Length: 113
Image (spheres, helix red, strand yellow):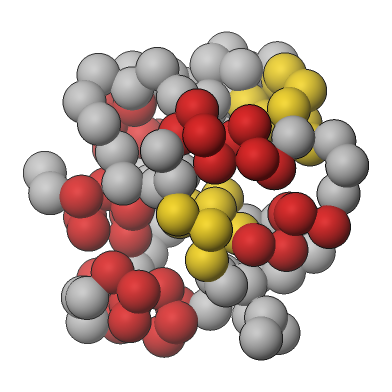
């Protein structure tokens, strides 16, 4: 699986809760056609991340994952991210989330600039 597939299909893009992913924008950022952007099914998520849907962490995956982090998350002082198990989260900040994931801040939600 290549990085574009992982990000396009899975939890590799972290949008804020207030906006849906803009599929055309994501496709452009990833260099793939818009039709490749889709919601991953639970089996794909488990295979790609080693974690079950419901608490997928932005880190700790079996292989490196290209990660786009919704830039609107920077508006918040503290964030909560999945902690690797269903119904678990950890507190973080936007700069820390970008650092620990090696992510790229990006305008990924509809209505973003």
